[in-house]
Image (cartoon, rainbow, N blue to C red; front, side, top):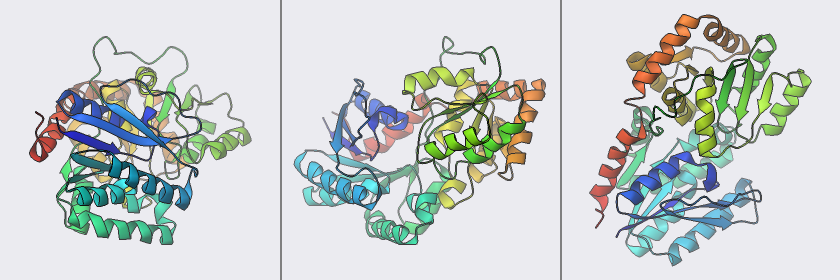
Length: 368
């Protein structure tokens, strides 16, 4: 049985994307191990159809964390047998590539994002140069790579000369038994995901000052958690804005259909966000929730085909407030988008997308 070893830098508990991918591979007959990091607040891992391993580090963030984690990952890969090392994002690619070369095995690059173009990297030129050096060293030497959208695939192919397949980050289909309507009471405006730079969250909170009769729920944590909580207190919005913290995938899946509006707002800070295709956009579609997104290429393409979004040409408190007000006040428009989401959900689900994943890996090594 071929053994696939997937590597990430995050805590495994909340990584819905990798749980889906590893589950599909395991059920297709591969032996799968997913390797991530252990954090001080890590909760016990849930049993999955694949094996899981967390690596402990002394450093929790910054250059020292990435250096330490890559060294620990290098020696772990060196000691652990595998047929395919799947390095998820650039921050685990170097050890995966080096050990695969040493062992004569296959290295796959799973580019969840355009790592050198994320805002946290773009605004630090020295850090960006280091990661770009890693990218230029490794990616042109790879034979197997995939990413989450056609726009990003084209960019990466043009820059590094390596062909990228497209495997979209879409959720499992919602069964009729799971389908829910928005919860009774004040309409919920839901953001799910990390609370990090460039996600437009400061604009949303500011816009909530003039949004009446609705609540903003933020499901996740991140680098801006403390700053956003301070902003809510400063503006006196404690009764309008709720911080839900990290939610396990099953709880988040149950929560999302109860929302009236979903949010996926990104500042145009680097090519990664501009050509992104976030999983939360598909989560909202699958849950039948109209969502507000940016008028970036991938979302424009989906909107033209399915009509499931409200798109913003600019990101500002006024633009966000206007979009929210439109969905809250125009019930016919809200219902039309909701119906479009339900229709699109029949195509935009993991049960269909996993066939691309399995076809990709069968070309590399077939399960016994």
